[in-house]
Structure formats: structure tokens, C-alpha cells
Length: 213
Image (tube, rainbow, N blue to C red; front, side):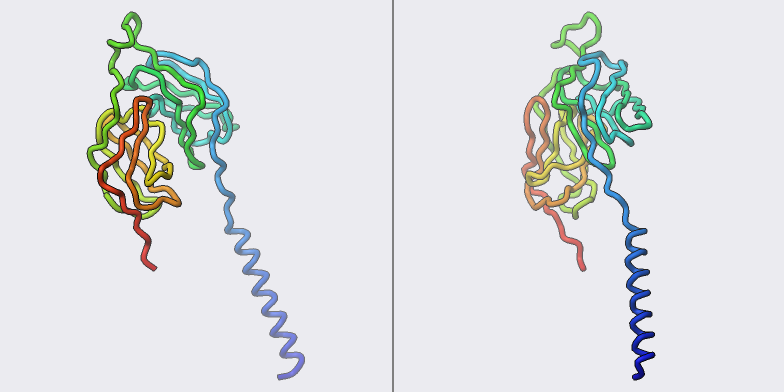
């Protein structure tokens, strides 16, 4: 093989490698930053009230009061504060405010209290918080990232959901149902849900499956 052919081959290889590197850079996407909560106002209010939550990386936020999704959520264009209206089905009582974004889930360090209707004492409000209970898990085995439906009772106000001790992203459509995603680094174990009243753990272990191939 001539020196010219070798030089041509090396030049062609350099071009291919360069194009591959540039293509990989173009396809790379920055990760979405996790949300954070700095403060909120007011610190207590009745259903139907608007609460303003301040923090960072709140774009695309879903807000939960006592585990119930807020009725309306408006996020500032800078992603630094959110206005949310407390849904009418939200239970009375104290709990952390939860925010779910594409970047993750965060709960406020301070407690927000949903006040009972005007003139009604807290113990005779719409609902008295009771210990959570998990009745079923569907499916009972799945891979990381899959959706899992947790059914039971008194699940509103969920502060965290864990798969084998690993916290998961989740939503609470109702006080009897939670939809969670199997988290990264999850391993086979029991699913647990914590509310302000206590912790519920399902009796049957959840199996984290490994994708074939």
C-alpha cells in the first residue's frame, strides 16, 4: 500500500471520528434540574384559596395539598414561583406541600394547613385523617420507570412512596389511589406509603424486573 493511500485512509478516519463526536454532542440533552421549595404564602387556608409557592426549577409543576392535586396551577415564566388553588376534595389538616416536575419531586420543609369550612371545628371537618392502608398493588412486578397503581384507603396527603426503601415519583388522584413510577436503584422489596398520620406497607414484596437483552 502506498504512502498516499495510507494518508488518505487516516484522513478519512479522522473525518468519521470528528463527525461522530459532533453528532453525539448535538444529540446530547441537558438534564432537567430538580425542583426546590423556598417558601409559600399563606401558611394555611380553606379549599378554593390560592397559594403562592416560591422556589426554583418549578416549570411544569404539579402541586399537591394533603396529597390531592391542586385544581389550577399557574407557573411563572421564570420557574421561580407557582400559584395553585386548593382542590375542593382536599382533606382538612396539616401536611407538607408537594411539587412534582419532570426533574423530580420535592416536599416543603414547612407545614401547610388546610383549614376546615368556616364555623366548623377541625374534628368535624370534611374528613378526619386516619392511618393509611394499602390493599393492592398493580402490577406486582415491573421494571424501573414503569407505572404502578397503589390502591387502599387514607392515602391522601402522601409524603413519600418507597419501593424497597427507595423514594419514587408519584401522584395521588384520590385518597384511595396512588400512581407511582418504579424509581432508579429500586430493588425487590415492600412498597410503603407515608402520610402525616403514619406509614402503610404492603404485605406482598414488589419484584423489580430486569429488561431482557
